[in-house]
Length: 137
Figure 1 (spheres, rainbow, N blue to C red):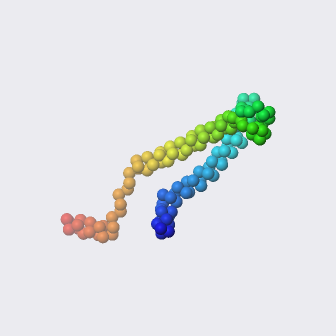
Figure 2 (cartoon, rainbow, N blue to C red):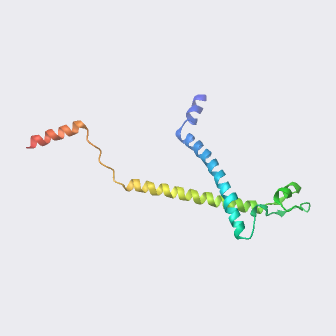
Figure 3 (cartoon, rainbow, N blue to C red):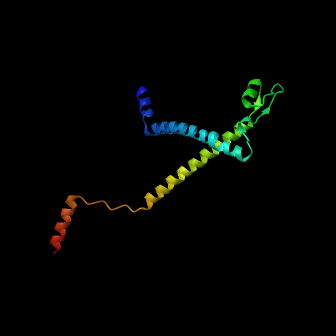
């Protein structure tokens, strides 16, 4: 059973998947920073200081805080601002992946369109071709 597990774990697809997950997690951190540190402040500046992260609806009367962190400590809240931020984050990730896949498909089409050079004949084939040509004369 251990041998079978080792064979399964070392298959190319499993290793490729593991690498993809690790790179995806790192990419997620980059996109989160892009959204939180660059895009959302720009949106806030354009909309007059609008900050989505603190938008919430209190679900109990005990919640009287004005920011989301304190409101969550006081009771249940509907944090739709966080949801908007994560939705924008998802749209950016999906768009970047679309661009990457589109670029890969373009490169693949260029490779397929380029005619492959005929393989160079071996030394034996060249020698036999020369002998044939000499015999024809």
